[in-house]
Image (cartoon, rainbow, N blue to C red):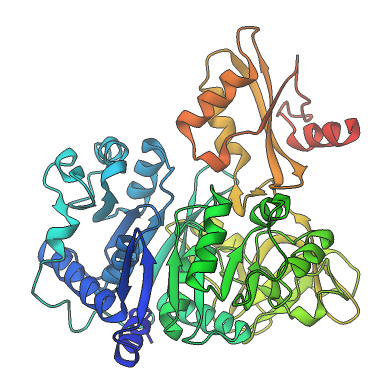
Length: 513
């Protein structure tokens, strides 16, 4: 089965049911299927071929949902890119996957235009909203594409083809493209909707960026079961989001710990004032036990699903809600149809209480990193049977006596903040580009709202302030990567070979608390 079949099947079952609510519009499954057909046909007419990559540089919007399914119907591979991405990194991603097409929106055309100057592979551009197409010579207006009357390809491909490339931070400082086939996506979506018990009656509100696989899968899973997706751009205005939840009678609400902390800081939420809310999901990091108790008091009718995942397999584990009170620090057991276990440095399974690396088996495991064989070989290694490879996650875990899993930490330096994986190296590269900075180390520090906050420790001349450093970073990297704190030092600790030691920096910060 291919992913676009989710939409075709739901259109056949529920043609007049609301599929997406976004940007002040309500689209039915018929609307969504027809519009994505037309955009797919328009892309093919302009030369998009099977297997080509389509970069989606867009906010959460109904146009983004259409573009996702249009790329798939055209036999292409879509790659969603965070709308806060700056031109240099956008150019890197587009060049890395040699994207043939870029779909963006009017407010982002200045960044897109700057990136495209260094992206010769892009031969098709589409712009949604406003007069943005004028900023990109030769660009097709999204509205004009939707006027196309020809049909998309009758045979876009098979389930073994790539469906999407999701770029995730790497320890080298350059993002890596995670290759997911249609089979991978269908397996993950089927498993998750099974334990969430999703039905066509569900109304899911999503504020998470569609460039983040947790947010993206809300689109795919809603289409799979015929549910309604209410799409918002962010959680910047929590009161407005909660009012939308009430108005739309939302039944499912995916969040990350940052959002939970903000909700719990609000003083005017009456307990049980969201009677339609059936479930809340959480991933990226485990919710603090105190937050779980308070969420249960605020939303007594909602089941809380604590989960763990990573881009390379979408979702690893889920904790049955009835286990929350017994194992509040656990992220649960393997999702249905998969296996998760802990191994030592020799790849041997370890017993309860022993810390080791989490390994994942299942049909949801990626095919590898795009044109990065060495990184792929580090992550995908021989499994227990000769015909397979399994995913070594780089995450340290332990199990209890009943096999429930507990996150301990990362093996590498990757920082998880606001639900996103962040490479310290990428931020350090930006810091070194600021005149006056001679040494830099970026580490994660515990934060009650963010999970981990990003802290930059720098050696610089006396001309720079912390605000100067933060402003410089905000110009060059996504907002979630900008350091929350900056500390100046006269020198940074080094290894025996003279390299700056992030681990020693982090240890010194921890000891100072």
